[in-house]
Image (cartoon, rainbow over all chains, first blue to last red; front, side, top):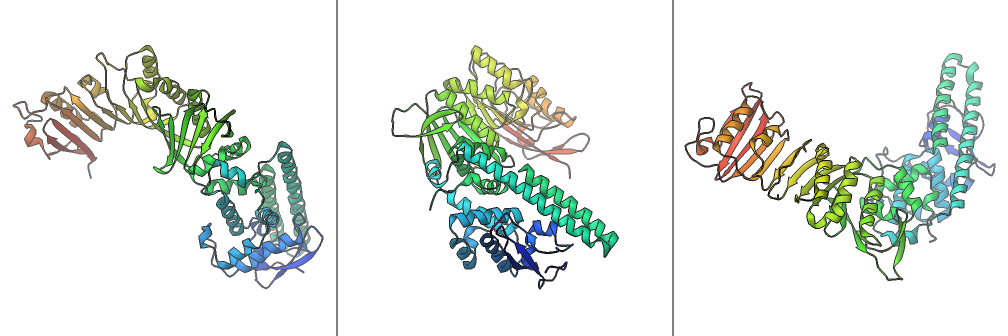
Length: 203
Length: 309
């Protein structure tokens, strides 16, 4: 069950690609700018579908968000050396596949702090290396792989559009309660979602 | 740990990774493959203005940001070592030796290779160049300078040792039309009939053998900083220069330094004073908008202009 509120006690249901649902606190979810743009003010009727990502990935991402709820406001990327023991463990216990899934999910959910730390970890793989050493560290994709990547991004854009439509639909249902303000909210949300969708498609 | 699929990352994440790397790391990464290079170029890391020093004597290109984080690219003649790592740079497959802060590239045609590296850098960054043109590097300086001026690239420092030849005249005509691209232009020597025509001017100019730099040249010069050594200007000329400045001439002038054996403590006065009396004097323009502090020495005068407070 979800409801429009700003209290950290409020729980939201998240739906993964397997169709499984689990709870996430409002405070943790609010670290996602994508969530803020879609659901924060209007609430969500039923589980929020982040069905492009599996349960393990989403749980990992929101584990990070739950942990950083009580940290000070995010003030830009930290150097790797400044990461806490908890942060380091969080990253170190992931294998490469999970790390990439977390980056993708964090990027889609627009969780600034987590995305920034992931970027820093990737940059660290390249730092201090010369071209020959970098070639050993990174996989250079073939033309087919690049084409496949483009298809995945198109699919994600379509998924984002679907989520946006669902959010707008939910917003419409609340119109009867507070007709005029909600209509304005729906329009605002639609505008935000359209912008988000367009920027995603342009990527 | 298996190799990391860098290019499969979301575009925004990839951009953040690129931005967090140093200049040298970005260049090293760009040499990994054409696809990586294209991705870096797509990010147009133009907010990072890099300084590029072109050493056309040793075919070395030095890239840095504010003089720090230096990365050196040595462009050598072709190598026959078959075991050397091959990279594709600007469409050419070339042997290379990589180090942490430098790379040696072995080109079949080192002149074309030098230009290829510059083109590669220009796609990545907004560059400001510094270099020296002389007869001894004319094989490289002619095509390089010509290309950079055609592309309207900016120069931090451009040194020149003028030499008389058809190629040189062609080059001078080309760059003298676009001197506004140059911050600091330095003429380090000259030949007997050296009488250059300036179709435009740099911001600052320094001339080492300035016997040809007459009052006519000086009066036409709109540079902010002018430094001339081995000049033939004398006390009478200085008097004329300062009177012109007081009357509103040299509107851009911030600093003028003249070295001449003909600046002496003789009876020819400057603004009614001899050269010793002029030392440490503060003068001002007739309209009172600017003041200038004068510093004199044996065969030398410096004039530093400041707005009137």
